[in-house]
Amino acid sequence: MKNFKITNIGKVVVVLMTMLTFTVSCTFDEEFDPNRPSLEGVLTDASENQLNNLVVGVESGMRGGVAGQTVHTGTMARELYKFDADPRNTGDLLGANGATLDNNSFYSTSVWSAKYRTIKNANILLEALDNTSSVSAQSASGYRGFAKTVVAHQLIMLVKSYGRARVDVSDPTALGPILGESEVLSQVVSMLDEALSDLSAAGSSFSFPLAGFDGFDTPSTFSQFNRAVKAVALVYAGNKSSALTALNSSFFNLNGDLTTGPKHVFSLSAGDFTNGLYKIIDNNGDQIIVHNSFIADAEVGDKRVTDKTIVRSDPTTQDGLNGTHQTKLYATNISPIDIIRNEELVLLYAEANIPSNPTEAIKALNVIRSSAGLSDYSGASTESALVDELLNQRRYSFWCENHRMYDLRRYGKSASLPIDRPGDQVFNIIPIPLTENE
Image: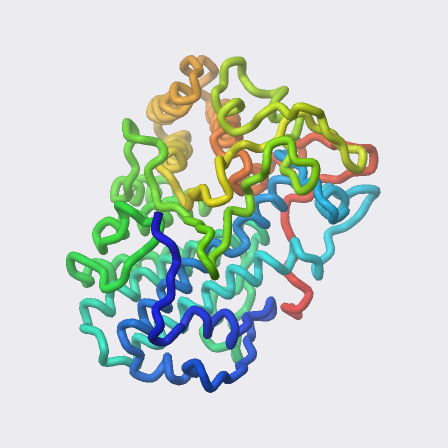
């Protein structure tokens, strides 16, 4: 497994993490360290090593907030419970006793901060490229295509939790407005097309290594990832026909390995961090407990239940909630987390085909059902019936992967979620942090 490593020249990642602390209000403070290069040094004729370290920082940053976002939205969508010492995980997120979500709590601020930290680092990379003579125009195109694709991906992650995002943050002293979902997704699509043009001009190889992008680490193969991200944005935006075009240029393969795709990777190396969604089996401390409805609602024989969850030796309870199963989604604390995989692309293909080609949609849904050990779909071919089947397959394919809350919200089905305790409520969107001062 490749680790995220920083060379001795520039130590740009360390600089970005310690000198430039990106806050939830999209600003940053500078603390100059004479033993490390300043931000101006990175932005003025950066060396190739410094640019490559910026890439490492951007890619590593993509992992930031992944575990928290998954647990927060998974709790709100009644996929799971986070049983730990913080009562807000079983209180606020489930609307206990009429509670409202706090726009200054960790579930509001942490993901917003993490995603904008990554976007800021990508913008620094883009600015550095405008002011360096250390790399060729062809190589610079590769860096730009990478950075713009990552920014687009991070904006989609923000939309999924918050329903809105601030797209223009290139100048911390003059931030752009917070935009609604449709406008964010529209700009994401344009950004991804710009990135594709850059990637097309980048030649046959990148000037930088990537970790977790095995098979997607050249301009042409990374372009397939770019098109996959565009397909996600287009499906979310409701542009199904254009999504099919994007899928055809991605790594989508209806008959291929469903696990194929780039991944977030982790390690035990100094300065790196581990997979925050891994939990020790039968641990009585920090634990991800499976919502009982995920077990009860599953079709008989669905392998995804036994692949992703395990029965605890002793059922557990906390704050009036209980569960018999816990996560076993990740085998170790350095197991990778998918960024996007072919299984998601197959289900996007099904979703995009439902309105215009239900036969093809059913064909794709049956690929997923077959992989889960289930027989072919035998329900109605109406759009509403197929949407229900799609959402059910997404529920079981992407349990504990930050999809369920947004899937139900975008289809107006959040009210179908169960209420766990008297007085609980269903929330399907996280508030913008207080410090944004809208």
